[in-house]
Length: 407
Image 1 (cartoon, one colour):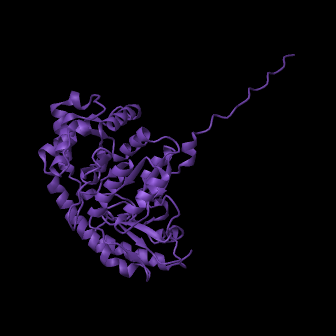
Image 2: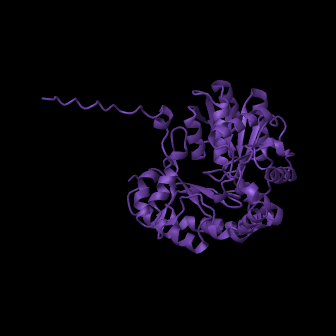
Image 3: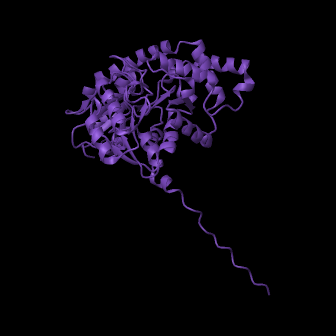
């Protein structure tokens, strides 16, 4: 008689890394998944208007690259990026008042990758990072994955308060300040010229890296262009400037870049080698060809003209849609405006009811590194036409009135 051998023990696999367990997903992405129904007017996403993409021009650039240099376009490339694209980007920066050498740039797979590379190159677990309050959500994710301790800098409708910034630098000893100083996400606000100079002076005086993220700066509808912090005295050797084609050409290209001092740029290049070797060659060459054959500035001006009309349409309809006592800003550019409802409205609690009226926004709470203001919400005004915006605001008003404020 043979005795059956016992079944082998089945042990659990090792757990996920602590950083993967501690950092949640993007509430914005979760909202977009829930509101993907075509009948929903979606003010939640930060999506550029697809009908304004220069599809023909971009297609022609790809066709030219693949016809004239297919072996190069389909081959591996250098980590730093294709020279033709870096030359074009450096020329654009220089023309805008920031002298830039092509070798001072690293092309990234979207500017979001630049944040991840910088977190890898600069941050040890437990290091302190200063951010705006509220802050771009995906930056909070990137720094959270790096194990950083994130501290919000007080500010107002004009951006971060330089005096509060200096007090925090002295007390917290942070590695860096992350800022979107022009048409910020989520608030749409712009840091004034005086405060930019003051922030640069604090960084110089106290020893601080500045990550200056500028995905929206070219989308200006009113007012005068602000200088990059990277161009200001005292900030030259400690500011990383991030740029992107996502809002001015097309997000599907996944093309961004960073301009950084040499040692940090090289560290980011090593981190990128470990992440993806290089940004897709064909996308880089197509973008360089597009810049050579087309007037991107003229295209951006046309897009900005349409977006200005959409911003104005949303501004004109907010008073009728929002409850009495609400306040909102008037951004000079970008894609977003920021709303604060009166107490005791809770925009997170109200969102499911509003979505049932086939319209969506992003609650403000996820954008805060510290205690959130639950009365706030973000609206994106660029994706819909003025007529759709009018209808969306009508639905929003109905949704907000459908239940008691604290529900």
